[in-house]
Structures are given as structure tokens and as C-alpha cells.
Length: 605
Image (cartoon, rainbow, N blue to C red; front, side, top):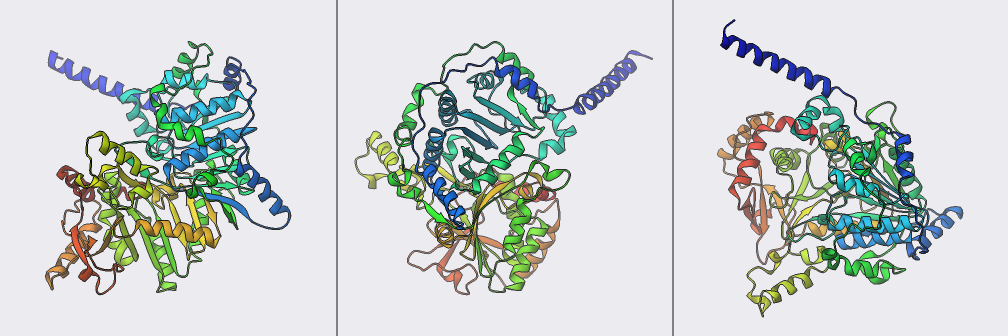
């Protein structure tokens, strides 16, 4: 064997060894819950209890009233819709300060930024007055580095943090570890806990779509999510608490200190009273800090109005969604059952318009049973979307959604005309920025509406027949139905349903959204283009036909809005193309490439 052959043989052996290494390490076990670990490290934490009473809260009073209603045979509970990000943060801090016994938080994302640090400091204060605080975070998006997580884990004996379904024994795995997980742990990586809850004393709860990051709470200068939560005070929170307990006690809920690199950092620390918020960030939360201790938030802000609502039901997927017998309350099954009762209209809002075959069949069956049934969807345009690849797949199948499934689609503008109503205090913020720039007259600003951040819909809500409302974490897509666990609050109250429907329909108005409708047609040419487009769309790859059945429209000045299927629609609207207000050509190119070659991935989106 000459030198060249030896080198080749050595490379082959190295490659084989590398494969064996990946197989052996890739097939290694992932961490599972160890109670002994938690007890050991709890003894090392500080355990001072300060003399601080919880604040009085109208929601706690209403929870008492709701239980009294139940004893009298009434189903009335109390809810507030959290439409504004600032309201959602205010409500969370308020409930944390009002908690007497326990605070439980379940979330998909916890980002280490000023907003989450502000919330965490409030949780420490609650722990210091004797409240048991538990935080459960999905491990797909790690919340911080090992040193920071170790400090969070050591913050107080009454505060415990667990990660749901981590894939490795360490937090930091590097590029090789990522690919090992992607190749050998695809099933675990792909099935995530998407539920979002905040519970106070098991009596008042918040459910919805918001994670813990400034973008969800009106605290980012360039990009914000338009999301939605609901506060519930009453017996429905019992099911919320049961749901949290199932996940918290699940073997995949792993304590922070079970991760080796977090444990190593933990043992270096000494107990202290250090807060996590930076002094330079305090200005962002001054108003929240001042208002959160008030008894009635509705008395401070009309947007936090409390509704007395009938038939409030919390529905959730359990951790057993993917294995063994299903939980008694499975979100997707409940969703299908409710949808099957529809007779007039479905008005809903979701970040992504992607549906499984069964979901599309469900829509078609409703329309077959009720020919006049209307489906109105508020979603993101490419200019507003946060995930290009998901939008690309929605764009690929938009003809099917519009023509066959019968969905009237309204794509949100990145700078909607009503954005000053969507973001708390935006007008004052923009005015202050204009003055700081030395501009004396607001009319001198070329585009006042674009002075704010770009907005992206993240809310997941629907209203059926103007009678049943849903606010939750479910995106109505294949991933939510088959891959993630989800939860949501169904409210069978017409007053709440009307309020929510009005908010979603407002997002569909011409100043806030483009209307999707059939594109202009040319005899014969459009027919053949449509035929080729249908064949191209059916391909999982190489869908390269550039022309689409639908396009986006802007209302002409002085014209009245019309439904997208109205015979006179195009007389009142101007065709603004497939991707209005997308000025970056690379974004358009990426979208078309993903549309062309990612069709096979729809079941995973």
C-alpha cells in the first residue's frame, strides 16, 4: 500500500469513525426529570421571606364572584381581551403582584432581553414574599447562556425553572451537536410545547399567543408582533392549572440544574439579592411599574374592559398528544367539532395560511353544507411576515385557498393606517421623536405612519357565526395540529364574540390590509396560464411558473370597499402585485425559490 493509498484509507477510516461517533452520540439518551436534583439544589438557595403583602386585584375579586356564580348554577366568568402589547405586560405584572400562593408560567420562548428581565425581577419579588414560582420553557429556543441561566436558577428557593424536552445534556452543543440532534433526534426536535399560560393562585389565568420578549409587548423600535391574549377569572382556570401540572410533572420537564454546563456555573455562585434588570432600561417600564399595583386595571385603561362571559372553556393538548391514549381534551379535535357547527361565517386571524388536507376538507364540507358560508382570514403579507419560508408556501397554494377552499384573504400591511391604535402610546412616541429631530411641523414628515415599527400579525383567534370566540396559541396550520401541543380559551358569549370579531375585521379594512382577489384576466392566455400554473403548483419541487391566479389589491381613493368576489371588485381596486411594499429584491427572489422548491415541506409548517 503506497502513501496515497494509506492517506485514502486513513480518510475512509476517519469518515467511518465519524459516522460511528455520530450514531453513538446521536442515539444517546436525552435528559429526563430528576426530582433528587431539584431538592439538592433547592437547599443551596436563599430563603428570605420579606414582609410584603400582595396587592388587591379586581381579577381576584371577580374570581371569587365567578365561583359563587357556579355554586348558584350560573356559568358566568370574567374575561379581558389583551389586544395591546403594553396592556398584556401590565396585566402580567399586576397578576404577579396580586398572587398569594403560586405563580405558574408556561411559554414557548423566553428571550433574555429587558422585558423578560423586568418580568423575572417581579417573579423574584413574589418568591421573596413566599409565593411558589414555577417557569416552564420549551427547550428548542434556549432562553440564555449557561451562566445567566445558573443565576436565574439560584435567584430564590421559592423559584424553580424547567426546560421542556431538551435534546442534550448540555445547553451549548455547538454545530456538531446541532446536526446530531437534527439527524438523530428529529422526532423530539420537531414536537414542541407551544402552550402559553400565566396562572396566579390557580384562580386567574392568561392564555394566548404571546411569548416573553419585548417584541410582544410594544418594546422594540423597529419590529413588533400584533398578538392577543385573554385574562380569565373563574372556574375555567382549574383546567389551565391541570394542564400546567401535566407538563410540569412530565418526564421531559428537566430542571435547569440538570444540564451539566448550567450546573457547573450554578456551583460557582453565592446567594445574593442582585436584580436582573439593567438601570438603563428602567425608563421602558416606569408607567407599568406605577400602574400595575392599582386595584382595577379596567379603571385605568378602557382597553382592559372586563366582560361577564358565559360558557368559558379552556382546551389543551396534553404531553401525551404524540404517544399513548389521547388526553380527554384534545385541542384539534375540539376545534374541528366547534367548526363543524358553523352556519354563517368564520372570521379569524393567524400569522400563517397553511392547512393540512383534512383542514381544507373541513372548510369545503362547511361550504357544501352551507353555500353562503363565508370565511374571512386576516394574515400577513410578505412585507409584514416574519418567516419568509412559511409565507412562500402559503403563496404557492393561494389559488387553492381562495378558489377551492373559499377563503377571503386580507394580507396585513407592515405599516397599517390604524397602527397608532394598535400600539400603546405610539403617537406620543413618534411625536417625541419628531421633536427631538428638530421638526416643528408634523406635516413636514414625509410619511408619518411609517415613523413607527413594522408590524407582524402573531395573534391566533377566531369567531364563528358571531357567537363563539377562540383566543389561543394554535396557528390553524399542520404544525399546530400534528406536531406541537397547543391550548386556547373558547368563549360562547355573543358580546365577547362581537368585540373580537370587530377587532379582526378592523385588521381587514383597506387602510390596514391588502385584499387578495383573482388577478386580471386575458381571454385564452389566462386559461392556458392557469392550466400550467395548476400543474406547476402540484409539483413538490420545480414549481417555477411565475404567474399566480390571485394578486393583491389596494382600494382606489374615493371608492367603497367591496368583497373580493364581487363582480365590480376590480372597478374599485388597483392591482398592486403579488408582494406590495417589498423593496428588497432578494426577499422576492428567496420567496419565489422557496415557493418553487419547498412544496414538500407543507406538512411540517
